[in-house]
Length: 194
Image 1 (cartoon, rainbow, N blue to C red):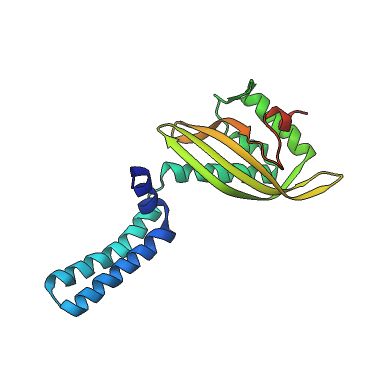
Image 2 (image 1 turned 45 degrees about the vertical axis):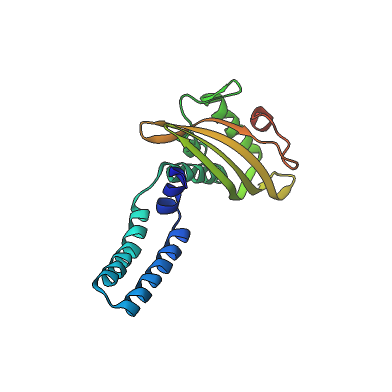
């Protein structure tokens, strides 16, 4: 188990940590009830303290991967609300994707959201790799797309987004669609050009 796996288990995965702690505590209590030794009692008490303390620590500690996840969710919410200003807060001044700078990207998103409405977005298959002050993410989004002429439900898209840490905040420095069978786009300009 690598450092990344240990961090995920102890700090990011309550649905894994808590059942494991409960099973370990159950075993320690059974051992104490059978042996009734001071050592087994202390082990059961320490296990109980860990059952209480580790989930609290997990709730208090926010890892960089969790911070990136929060930013992605906020960006998805901003697009769904049509709030370009809120989305722009997460776009780095260093943004550059396929010769599109920050201003061009924000203008393209504004134009696109005037033509299309995004509803009920659902993030899926989120993968995040954090390397120092850079995070690379890949994920899918399924949503409803509305235009004045039509509505497309359960429209899938796939993305690769790179973030950098600027003054303690994660900001997007590039975004590219990842082509799939139902989402054939290979370049950002295919999606945000007027």
